[in-house]
Image 1 (cartoon, rainbow, N blue to C red):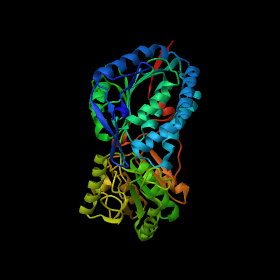
Image 2 (tube, helix red, strand yellow):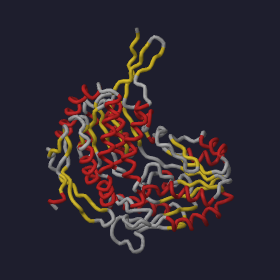
Image 3 (cartoon, rainbow, N blue to C red):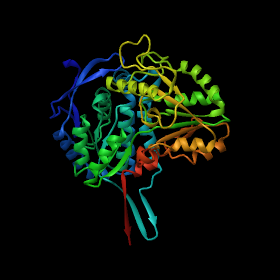
Image 4 (cartoon, rainbow, N blue to C red):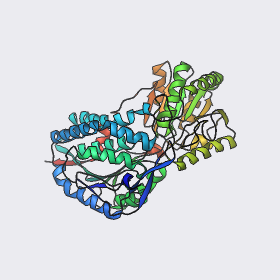
Length: 471
């Protein structure tokens, strides 16, 4: 076990042994076996990281746009150079299928997208006789989840640095192997000491210490709504700026004019994205009552295109759940769906045949689901999709919006103008029509899906404060 011990955090430009002594096991979710341990940081380490970021802030906040772009390019090149190492860590520790290599490629594109954003961004604006200066908010605490660890680290880091902030990153302790590979790459970019610091630890220890620290001015958090509410309350004491990207229960609306082969495929892709361990997963599929039988026939056949299995098998579309706890959570929802009267069309409880080890779930498709059922209301974070029926457009919109969440939505139609009309009525931060995607558009949620926006100009402005100078 000792040779697989990750016992370094990143403080003030150096890899150091944490003050914290607690060890946490790391698992390969495809086998369920322990693959190593990580030594967790504590409150002392967190305070040291914040202090380092605070020391580095005056110099970094004074850098020019060109200097920040140069730093982002160096970070991008350093991460790209370690692509294979990062991908291996994702495969082993997270179990993402090989075909989901976008999880590592997105880490590189996160820097490229922010470079594009920064090149066209004006930090000085004029309103009447006032000059408005967009200034960095200060030291930022970046709290990232386990379901795409390298991307979230790079995306939040790129945005904060572009704004002129210095940062303390708290990744999930469940992703320590991925974090370690990523940190080694970021270190090689040669940024000034203290500009970014990475402390792996528990949310109730390191996360709490960050959100309560008076020298942290900004929190950017991606994770569950329940934890987001805790951060909201704790950050209120010092009135921190917040960006909270939280849970979702995204609808996929298939309109009656849609090509069902294409629409059902698109809906299943949206639902099973990242093994359904994604906040944007389209887990509620809304279909016209008049076409239900057709949809079920197509969906049943298409489910064969989403095999679950070994993440290293190029054919695998859905990998294991990240942990035994998450596997048990998904199983409980499948059982709850049956208990509440939903009908299993494909899949069901327990492990798939031939996969007795690891945290694999049978991809499950429910029919006869109503929007008051638990499986239609709560975020499952596993490959469990629900088909609901609607009478007409108004009913579809009513069902789609009848949720505590509002992160993402999908619309499938052969009539783009009609799809846009539906999209304009949906309470969601992003709406994808027929699979459309734009990485620089703002990302974030309505209602309990969060506060603020990430990506592009909107994400950058979340790390800036406007200062008006009037002469």
